[in-house]
Length: 328
Length: 117
Image (cartoon, one colour):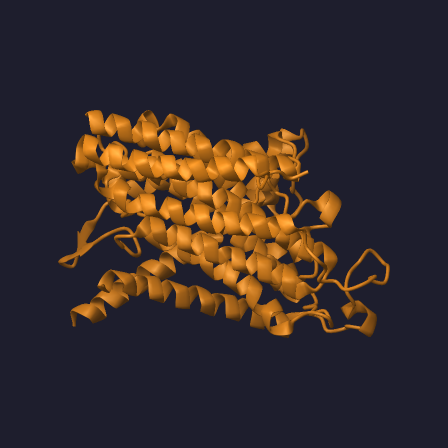
């Protein structure tokens, strides 16, 4: 009976988390447009419902009834599968992030994390890398010059920053002594890791922005030169899947940032999930704020920043952290 | 091992949602496609030459550098997990590895593999 209950328990958690994530993503698009609007001294969407609150629903319905175009030249199988890969990896990534303490219900100890696996951080890296396939294959299968260029740029940029990203987080792993995200959170009971790793946090912020292709590193899309990049040929919900995946990725990166550097769900008085959601929202606001503030970087500058600054800086951070731990 | 069951479930679950969304949109969507609509999009012009064009050699080079350096970074992960208990010995051992990594990095930089002009 035990495996049965365990499967049922995780199924319930998955349904709840994915539903919250999808709703969050839908409203994140509204929050972002509103916030960007305010940053640019305009109102943002305000016609559909009070304060534009029904805008995400209207967008969703519109996407569903749009014509589903598959170009003649496209590699049709890959063309359909690519947005699904991006979506699946972006959603599945959330599985290892703990969003609260464990509690007891009907004599069962329920942990507020979907999958408490011992290689949590590696799992996130692995899915992040797999997510690139969606972008690259999507651009390639579209058989369009803009899309191919966009996907090539995306591939080169993401893999370049992944090296730095992997290196930056080693400092955190040294301090926590574990790849399991629940243990990384527990290790921050006596002080958030941002106090020990402020430099790594800044590097991580830059690298993860590049990893999820957001401004100032939104080269793969760069509307002004590539007319939207890898997803230029996509329409209707296939296009929307790319968008949902992008925003789900944004939420995951924000949640991962607070898990690694800001103590995750830890906090006084209020229950864990509330702290988790609150901190994640603040982090998301910072990411949107960055988008509203900085212009896009030039491609050669992006690659230069990744290889010539982030990589050595992250390596120095690892060595210094290790030295302090060794001397302790 | 049972910890990995939810991972499998969430991947299947997400895949089902994705399939549902794609399926629903292809059923619900308008179907008024004309032949020209399915052409490759290029700002109103006919596409000249093959759409999957030759790519710059730098992308290939970047991919190779990624393979090398990412594997070297992954070698640091097991060490990072246990270094808290190893003390000075662990640090010095890692320093040897990092210096070897740095030699390769400086070589790649001096060879101009990191330049994009």
